[in-house]
Each structure stands twice: as structure tokens, then as C-alpha cells.
Length: 103
Image 1 (cartoon, rainbow, N blue to C red):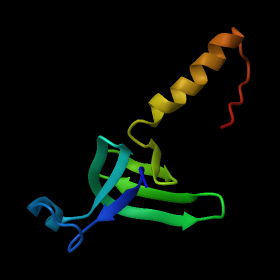
Image 2 (cartoon, one colour; image 1 turned 90 degrees about the horizontal axis):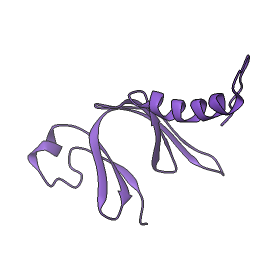
Image 3 (cartoon, helix red, strand yellow; image 1 turned 90 degrees about the vertical axis):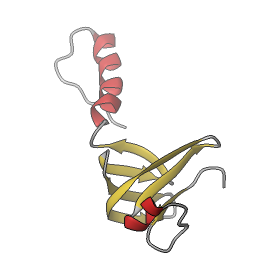
Image 4 (tube, helix red, strand yellow; image 1 turned 135 degrees about the horizontal axis):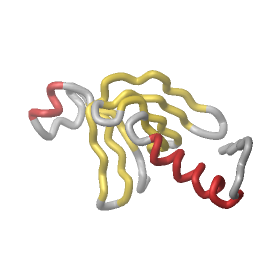
């Protein structure tokens, strides 16, 4: 597939000495852009008839939600994602008293 992610560890696709010392999470974002980061733990790994869901803990991003092999949100940058959802709705209303934004 064009887009996939995988976990590398000891004895798996060893291309450098760095990989022999730990586990890594890699994600193919586009054909010419890959993300690779230290994988500290896998908190959840499951699949339903609708999607594959993983919660991982990475070195640089902390807890990270991965759906269908694509990173969705992480502890480090979740504020950026959520603010981009909240602010347009708040500004469009003008004087909100209570707000519900479902996603």
C-alpha cells in the first residue's frame, strides 16, 4: 500500500546501528515523506470492522492516536488541532454562552 506504518525493533529491517538499540514507529505520510520516532510503548492495538486503532507512546510526541495507520493527534500538538476546530466556531457566533463541538 502507498500509506502504511510499522514498528521496527531488534532483528527487524535493521538498516543502521540506531535501530538495534530500541523500537521505532514509522509512518509513510506521502511517497517522499516518512515519519520515524522512538516508540516507548503500545497502549492499545485493536481493530473493528470499521477501522484499526492504536494508542502509542512516542519519544517526541507522547501519547499518539493512530487510526488506519495514520497519526491523528498527539499529546504534544493536540492543542493546535483542537484550537483550529474551536476558534472558527467561536468567532462565527460572536457571543457564545455554551458551546458543543463534536467530532
